[in-house]
Length: 209
Image (cartoon, one colour):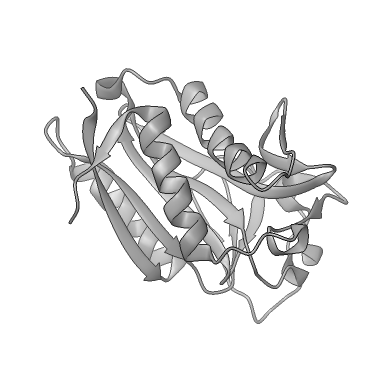
């Protein structure tokens, strides 16, 4: 039987406030706490993960930089990018971290394929790529068999802040978005599609707030 999961559609939220809320949720949850998905967008912000060696820091003083506790290096979030945070008890779900990452990547690949866009993953470089451009990023944190952080898919945003960093630590990595590929999708619409795919891939049913 599908497990229940709670979905929170948060709208535009401050990155650090949302991150701290994920930490609190994960630290205080127990065996009966429902898993949750948080759907959101963020105002402009750079986030630096735990892999901080040889990272080129941005020179955009008007955009804050947050030292986060997710895996990976540096990335950018901004309006027009759909973000899904995945707060799951992996042990209870009997789900491996690699399985989770693969499933999240497949959600994006499936969304793009429905519009005739071929997307791929890369070994050792989590995320989703169209030709040589990255369109979706992944970063997770695991604590006591429970995960948080998640997936960001570029929809219709200002991509110029990515030029001030080496996205995910890769010098010269080009970034794209669904608008540039001719897809007529809003971040909200894309988020709803991705949530539906998540339920199907991971065998959940939504328990609305």
